[in-house]
Image (cartoon, rainbow, N blue to C red; front, side):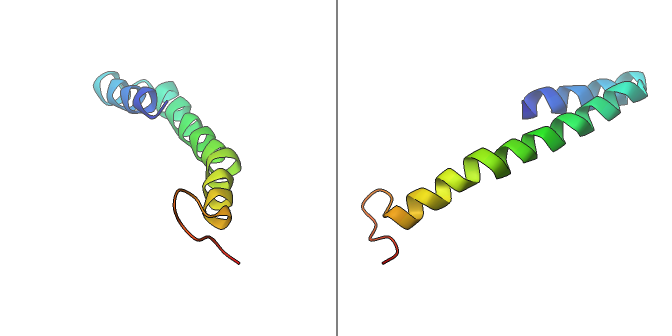
Length: 58
């Protein structure tokens, strides 16, 4: 999805279409939201449980 946002920004810079600038900003916000709500908690949970070969938190 980040690649799509990059392409939107590049297209905006070439054509000047302001709607693409707004769409890419919203897409980046969505990407951040997904990372915070779904990806980061999984990483934290795995680290607290010991992860791969780690001791984890006791």
